[in-house]
Amino acid sequence: MVLIMNYQNFNAINFPYLLMEFYKDLNMSENELSVVLMIDHLLSQGNTFITNELLSLKMNLTSKAIDSAMTNLYKKNYIEFIMDDKENRTSIEPIKKIIYKKFEESLFTEEEIREDKEIKEKREYLFDLFSKVFKRELSPIELSHVDQWIKEDINTDIIVNSLKDAAAKNKLSIGFIDSLIIEKNTHE
Image (cartoon, rainbow, N blue to C red; front, side):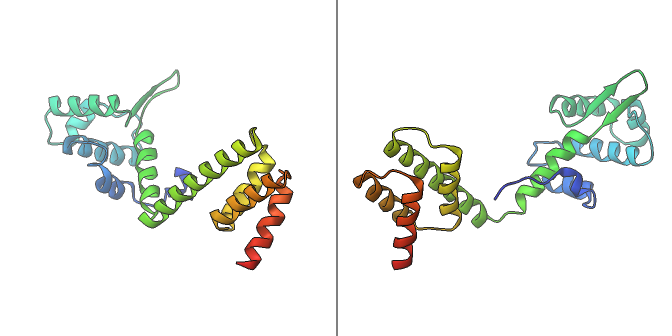
């Protein structure tokens, strides 16, 4: 399992909904939440530079509460202000990226996360064992063979025993180990 989705793919997913789902995980206050939601609303209406004054006109929060929320959001890298020669803009892209990443991670079940952890541990164990037995780091091609055995769900004991047999016969090559694995796997 590799998390590689581009957050741009999430445009069809309702950002305010996701924000409401995950704001507590992001350690946001309700004031910060309402400010981000209002910024998102104002940006969707074509406003580009959202100031504390504009927010004060649209919200029931005090100016001080809005200032505090905006400062905290900026410090947490949830919002940004882009100042250049052309225009000044307010952006909530940083928090969108974080929220969409959290959503993506939530799509995977606990079982998938556990399986991914088990695969990583199996890879580390086998890579380390092969390096010790070969008395050198494995080449990328050799590593890809070991990875392939893992992907094919070859029993770890078969891989380890094949490695030990190859070492005992002084034939330490991935090709020879692969032939032993095939032989042992067909007799299992």
